[in-house]
Length: 479
Image (cartoon, rainbow, N blue to C red; front, top):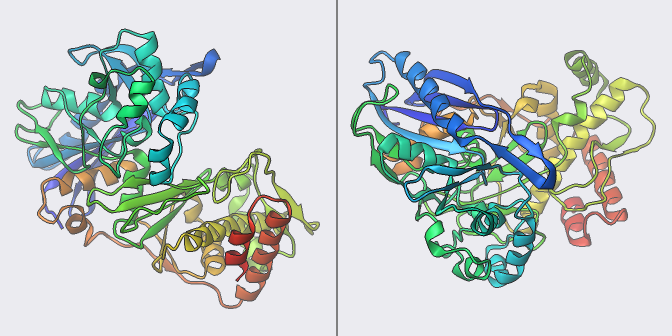
């Protein structure tokens, strides 16, 4: 484990956080807020990029001041940010447009055209181009503004730190259209969309050293390395411990996300998973559901209900606790809606059924990986607010048949600090993460396995009968 201090910066939608880390231990953290994005007609979703740097300076100054050497011992820094947020800049690299956020839809028409222009390329990657992909927003900027170039959030911050333009990392560039398999921009796509080649930044692997700090700034010393980071989701995955092939993490927040590592690219013809590229050349397949913690978010008595549901045991009813219309992972169906099979005896049983329903969704996601030939190592890592519930974690372990190891750290900024350390450590990311702290292990409950399996099979049968999952996935799921 690297014993030098590294700092990770997380530039999120609502604020900026910084983590100072040494030997896997968090030494200090700091946070600052950002102005809320402006969302308006025409699919606009914008933020003022000039607000990023003052917020970054604030958290860096605070976190370095809390260190014994007041920042002098910091050897490297890396930045993680939202995936797909871009800014149009002039020839000097200064913003000439607002930041077009990850959910801005003004490039939707261009993205639809990009699907056709790059069909062969996307097929090899086993991924598609969504209506909100940054690729289309780049074309929109080329068509509607005087921007000379496009930059992602981390490049804007890193340029301030180093004093010169820097390359993009292939993680933040993915939704801008970068092809991580061929390691190139899709020139045929951008040419067809009328985007000049010079608008796109050069791209490097995460953990690549982008430059160094030439004069002390925001508490960081001269000579501190500025290292290429990864998107917030990828940095959070690494922070949870999913770093090497076979390791996967189930992140149970408002929605459920499954992310992991494979040695080679695993194309998914169903389109519900896509892969980032690991800094060491491996692949990071993952998918995000519309179902998750929000299934129980309307209850003010979660601790009380958990205790009662734990005493009650498995529910007799089966539910798919989707709160909105449409699902995207582990199956994609725009008309999918939540359901309850049977009539709950009371709110305790309904609560327990909702917890089980999310666990069934996680098991189905793991079965989708099995269908693609991906092996998941035991234990499955667990992160997110839902993983703080001992009952929910035990249910998830029982349903999946895997132990669940709750990650002690799964923060984006922590993951960015690991990437920073990897940039100046022999052996790279694997060496940095080799001695990461591990969390508590929760084993399946053998007393409930039979009941959970029966309910899971009933859950899958209902999805199949409604036409939401295909026969192949159903067969894999029910054995």
